[in-house]
Image (cartoon, rainbow, N blue to C red):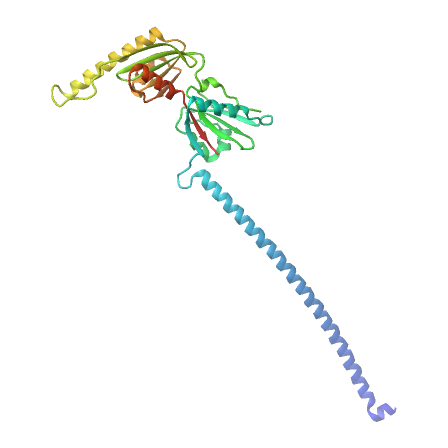
Length: 309
């Protein structure tokens, strides 16, 4: 009653309304603060996740670039694919390389020996080598050795090589290499034939046990006068034919064992059709027949080594 008379009731009601509004505002503020804190936490978590993703992207881009560089090196992007080493080995060097390859040991089916004739690379070897298979061009036959961990990868072009016209691939715990593919073994005949020179040696391994050789008078150039170029060519061709016929007769009389025919390519071609040599090679051996044969022997029994990677 007194409150009403003094106007306090109205004030109390107003105070209660304000207190309720204050409480409502307080709860709203607390809710907004909680939401703001959650938002800050969410933002920080999102930033951490973004940083992780950016780091991963940078890592993958670096790996991609490294793979691209390796691919460029292997494929020879500028057309300059090169082996790590290419060399023609003497007989002594060949023995050293064969010793090392034969000492290699891998797990069961861990060492591959592949015969690649005339550039016919088997699928398994092609898959392993990739662009490096282009390095096997340029030889009649390569013997390729590599292991399943790609620790070793070489190709050898032996002077004699396996008697195979088809590719083959074999896996074992070691490389399957026959020394007679690379080195003089057993009894054989090495014949050097040029348009004006012939030399034949019968060997037992590295020991020459018989020799027969001769030179023929073959015109080498046409003089300004005398007779026509056509007549000169006919005379010269006849002299070469006579020389090669003497070579055939010498081979028929003295040949013993497998025949290896070396010298000038044209002369080799004209003889090999009838003789069926076990191996042929172009060699640059000149001089007297016996000395030329010795040079030819050293040159023929060389092995090309290609370190593929």
